[in-house]
Length: 340
Image (cartoon, rainbow, N blue to C red):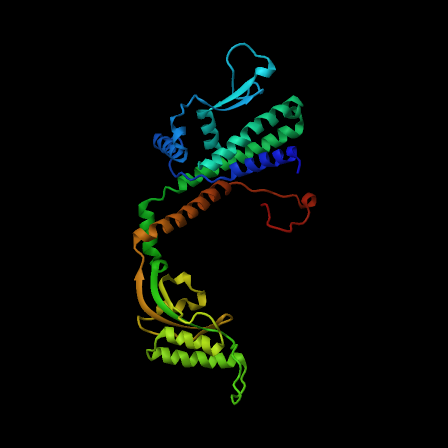
């Protein structure tokens, strides 16, 4: 790949990367608290020497490029002495506007790409590309994208302010989602890999393991150790591997099991389930104990769920008053989702 093409790919990739960075702050973007927090975060992400750089100190200087950010003061210099200066404040405003990431590597990547953007844009203007109709169309579309992204950032920030009362109400109404259980489980493969003994009557592998599962279930219900029974299940199936299997499953949520297995949460402590069979094998569970995640433990998860619901509701409320008619004679049959 030649150097010019590499630079073009770098610039386009950096722009796409910068625009794709998510907003992470849930504080109002223009509030004094948010500004102070951003300053603290910025300084924490910089090398120690960078925190002493004044806001009006140059951090990037593009020599030979005139009038892009902060031109050299005084009379218009000769082209060879032109330079464009970007101060710390200007660069950090750019980082903040692009949501370009505050980690040192992201900042360095943008510092490498931004001067190249300035030079390439200057050359494009020299060639009159900014006067072409296509440029204006793309500029208009970019404006729509940027405004949409900024609106989405604002919506996400507003949605993140979930009232404590809503979190508590969700916890009460969905208490089953936060129920936990400590279980033991025996897994019996559907088919045996073991060879039939000389005097043993041949049976289909599936039938043999189904019978084995029922025998193991009866022994489990009588109180035999699940670790021992799991090892015997593997031996019966001819499965080599862990000689000391651990059947315990601690503090598991209901949704942590396949839907067809979730009924084991309805067992009482000490009870053993019937054999549960599906395409992956046969399963036997024993419920050892039940519990419940506290509100404090569940709060981050609930907040994330409610935040997503609030974002969806806000977007729907914005879109609801509008409708789009699509001319199928022009666009043809739709093979994907309808734009309207």
